[in-house]
Image (cartoon, rainbow, N blue to C red):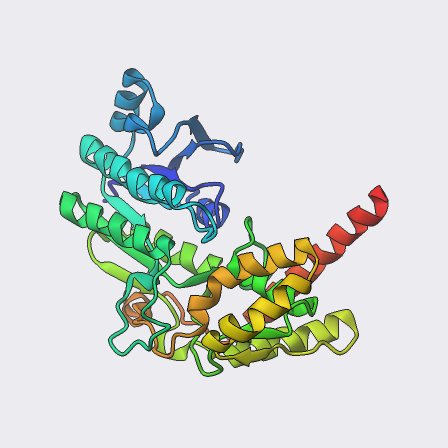
Length: 345
């Protein structure tokens, strides 16, 4: 007999929100909304703030929420690597602490979405050992969850991109910014290692895993939602972006040269970036926050074998197909933005 009837969800307006909510039709879903409005048929939205005690709710509102909910899915996080440390920490760490408190107060199991890159690569090179503050914040958040002893399941996706079939995504991520620069030939050189492994997964697959764990009321454990040994290499991903862009733009698109990160920092970046227009420099700087993921030569662990045998989650069979659909989505987005500019002009 199913005991989960009412789901409390954070991050509904984020990367995974709509993809997951579309699967939760049999549940009453309550979403915590901060700034971005969210309207979905059958979904209850309450305004609050995960960085505040009792989620910014009044005492009575908080107590009512505790009585209503059966399970919590915590996805809200700052994923913009260029954001200030205090903002990342406040949402990703303090916010998780407040959600853990809710889990305890409501006696509701917690499904906490983290990142696969909390993993310690045993043989990491000098680049792979570097950590951005986003990853640090996610490690701290996981420690809070584990130390709290609440009933919790930790879900660790790798780099999330758009939908498998349509490429759609609510918020463009570092991967999309990098892809767009390549598509528009604004990035002739890219700091990275050609044979590094770029572990990317589509948002609908991650949503499917979260739903499967919640639907089957699987409580406990840590799950890596990654391609693992089947993840593509950086050069393969770039080649696919360039090939698909060449078809879509109907012209030859040059592939960026992958150069050693140290060389890029010492000799290329100081000369190359200052000569570019301000907006292009800004776009490149934002995209290059993803550079740490372009130098990892070891595969991430993966839980897909377990998830396939227990819950029927299928492994990715054709990553090139998924990449092409994401590039098509970006291409259409670029064109629509250009049309808007032309119309305004």
